[in-house]
Image (cartoon, rainbow, N blue to C red; front, side, top):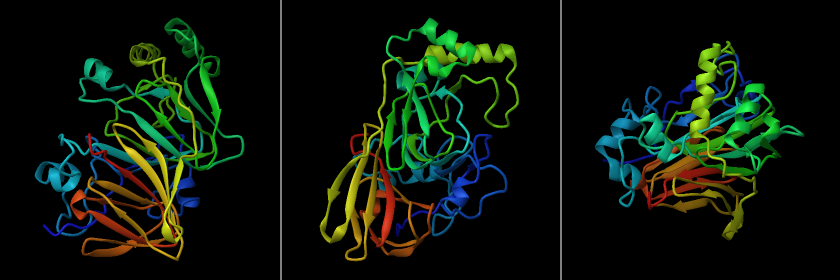
Length: 330
């Protein structure tokens, strides 16, 4: 097959914590009216799988491509599964996200009947002055203490509230209780999963109240899946400077995924060789992308999935792009 970058459909979630930041701050077009909380840039989640928009694979879902061309898509050294392993999103926390967690791998298999959990990382694209995130529980908090605080909806009594600013990244292991917002715009990369347990008395989808018995059941499930140990910290990443003013900033590396931010001026293009699938998301002005025989435009806040078979991508500067990818050893 003549492989080229894949433009995909992007499911949109209009949860109540969203606003208009993805459209107004990032310039994303084609969004529905009203609050937009999330755009799922690359997704193989059941019921929300991305579909290819153009080229010889147009109309095929990511799940179908995984089944038919696993090595060309993922790379020869990545163990394929039934789903594409990464999910990426823009998330608008114009209002606070619900306090929630996602199970880790072991717990997901034991309690959720899922093959793996959901570890994630957030890269802060924009944050209002004074913006914060709740990330993990404080030292010494046990199950009973956490339960009492959740019943009282007093999250600051037991959780770590950290200041956030644009350019920072935080790695959030499965089982970590968390939230962010208000006034926070995030790019997120994570394991492909939609399992989650919420602590809130209202639903994130529409703000309607959760019935009392259901809420107590939710808290019990959350406590069973909570892991007290992780206390993530935000950081600014590590810069690797290349010729021609190109800067590669390593934001996050893990067994599940890696995330980098690359910038380039006009002196030299950004040239990146790779052996595993890459998710290229434009965080800056529109750019021209060349990979394999394909050359095309990538607008701001838009994404291309680069199959491993392509091997290299060139982005003409000025450029500011995010690159998420599957580790070789996955």
